[in-house]
Image (cartoon, rainbow, N blue to C red; front, side):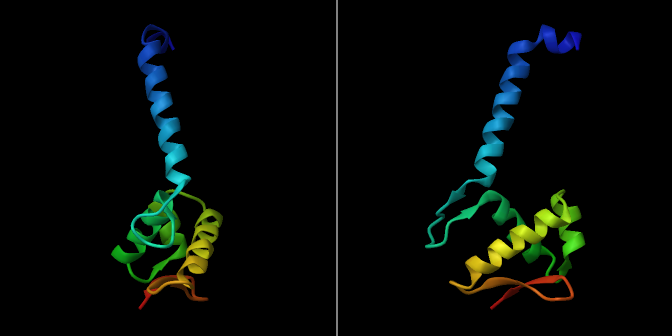
Length: 100
């Protein structure tokens, strides 16, 4: 705690930077497509592309979030994918793939 008091401006800058990143992480952007996606959704899609057929539990571990958060994120991506192709599809076996 003494170190934090001594370096209060630096600690404040670090906290401010992390808070800004957290706000951007969940905000949706239009990256040259008609469907806006968030940085969290991009990270999820990248992980599924890297490990086609990854389980929901594996995806949860890789992303460092709860299975509930993964399920919610996948449902959101599945809805977005219905309007475009390819999209993400998670089968009842809880394995995730990109549909073509």
